[in-house]
Length: 298
Ligand SMILES: Nc1ncnc2c1ncn2[C@@H]1O[C@H](COP(=O)(O)OP(=O)(O)OP(=O)(O)O)[C@@H](O)[C@H]1O
Ligand SMILES: [Mg+2]
Image (cartoon, rainbow, N blue to C red; front, top):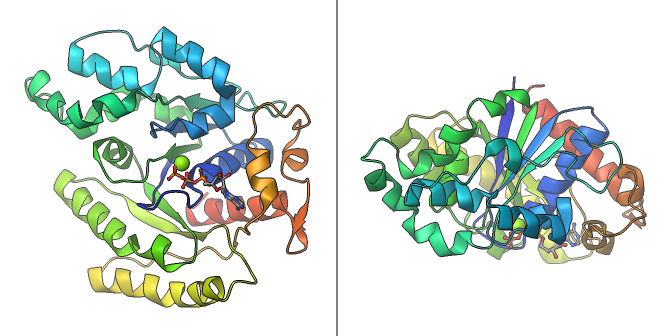
């Protein structure tokens, strides 16, 4: 059964995109899964990390990004073609035929405030949150995992992702600013799921960019679990775990997402340049991926 997982945090720069790309590459290369990444962020970071800028520009010119999917609905056009839009072999690693991508576009910024007009433009046949669902519902079944990289907000585009998701995963740096919005995320998604009559639950919280010598991070890590539990208890929702695997702050992480580095032929090479806390980055990512599969029940 397909597991659709949105990576969400209201805070920017906490590792949503990096975690999405790493999990996707690991699921395909190390665990033989078939994965679709959907990039919903106008910043197009996941898209550029997975297929590079040139290929993205080509797709954008051809009208085959998530922006064009929304634009079609708003302007009564038929530019977007799912078959053409889905990029196969979307990684600079070898043998990644089973990693697919639906690209984002910087132009999403221009229409994000207009997406609410979809209802009126379709004579109320379609809610603004259902555009992606309507287009993808059959295709999703072809995958083991669908990972959705969301922008740092809970606006209409992110809600299109939530609408098709079984789970949401919250990556966070263990500091007060990054964790501040977590209760709001859980509350808002819970409310949205009730309003829309959909089933989505929290898969857990992943600590990212952890600096082991920082007392603020040490304290943040310790208090995160009880605080997280309290949010679910207060809302009377099933408890979600804080992942055991903690992703350290490591310069090698930022370097690894460089699409044009030709030395990145295998997963272990790409994420094995240097050690952090006595382990290579690929070891952390593999443990994180195993946990994800465990919690998602596969
Ligand atoms: N574990 C890590 N160690 C060091 N740098 C990291 C790590 N994870 C991510 N980064 C870097 O931190 C920055 C932000 O990461 P990323 O883009 O994944 O965050 P994001 O949550 O997707 O941000 P946004 O909200 O802007 O989409 C990037 O420059 C990335 O390379
Ligand atoms: Mg991002």
